[in-house]
Length: 250
Image (cartoon, rainbow, N blue to C red; front, side):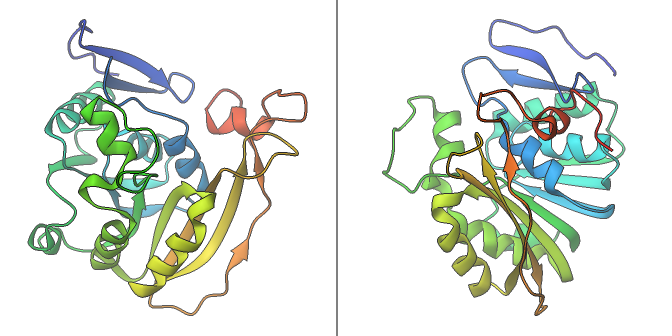
């Protein structure tokens, strides 16, 4: 780790993935949830060029670098304050040579066209449609949760534009919107090929889905075993502990 500055009343320096990744986050703004941990866990293989759409404070890219699943990561983020924290997080973790942050809008086609192609694109898009659900008064949080500045169609369009032929795109999204996600991916030339449902507890319905799609293929869809975050008694599962970096996983 390469310490940068000390935390203030406005931000904090927080440890994730068993303390192996450090994040600069706003105390009152957007803060890392379990979603990027799940998506990093879902990614298979080792990838040369990775794009994280709407990267927030950079946690997903830093996790992939720490887990040796990526050689280089580019993070694209619209909110300037989050880009600044992500840059500090990259330096904090000694990843300046392998992770690049871009301040921009994923709906900007000219910007995307200038970035080249990627073999893996990742996204943790806003979960809620515009004007639905509880609206958070904090702008950073509201933008991360609601589709006010580009919904799932914008993310799928950007992923398709950035991916090389047969490249992969992986998403974490509410399971209740799985049909929306699949339909949108197919419209943009991305074929769902691997899926895993996430259950908060054994015996409870899934609340999230991890979905991988490929560009320009006809691959069959593989439905993997469900990921249970806790057992019937509410104790965290071994896999839940492993994806958080709290226990090793073979």
